[in-house]
Length: 337
Image (cartoon, rainbow, N blue to C red; front, side):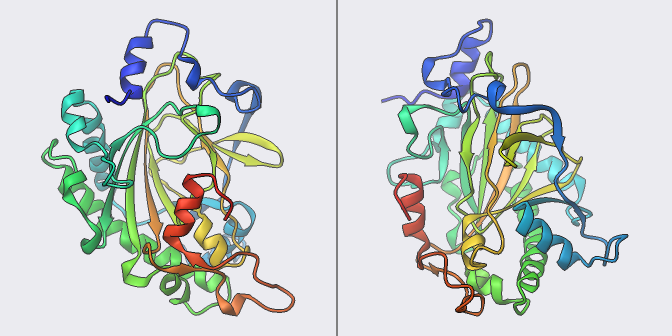
């Protein structure tokens, strides 16, 4: 059975003012009704090139505060060249601009799990759909990479992704070290708890085509990421929203910054000291929006639970310990953890 792609639906809907009913969110989810308009949220921006900020706060303190209070932050001077990021964006855009038959060559299969080109990801309440197509594939470690799900076209796709991955691994190593120190742990402890050198880097490209009714639809519904950490490159079309103080807010983008989300696994490992950010994505009437999140995940068989040093009589364990693959299964199927 042929899967409906949102890109195809969008091209059919181009000159209309309607979208299929399965994309219309319930009233308490519709962006027009639930976004606090006229306010753009300025999430913490952290300069990775500084040893401390103008208030004398160290980088460890800044990252720890942002992770406890916001569950997200943006980083600048992160060391990834602008050209490396623009190459990543270019090859991803070129893939989604290929004829549909070529995109379908790397479509998900029942056996492929999460990897491949696709449209649906998780069980949706009331059968509603997000206005997005996506591509998933692992980019690290080499033992986890399956090039079957990497586009062959454009020809520079692999090189652009591998160059980005090499730089991103350096950023991740710094962030996970600082996050660990911010919990009062040794600098390698959080990285080891996430799987050490076996931590999986899962690339996702989100492709949100223009939508005639951005007031009624969502790209991705409200969620926290099930990863440990997510490091994201957006294009310049606004779309990320964060839930804070009872409202949904647009997030202000900083050019060439990376957006970092605390995910569920680091919330669990930190025993709730760091908070996974509750977020969603909106769509645009006239422009295609894209984003390139990389999910940093523990290996599937690794057991994840609160780190022993962060559990005490005063601060008992708030989360169960379970294999990451079991956590993923429950999350995608809307089962209690």
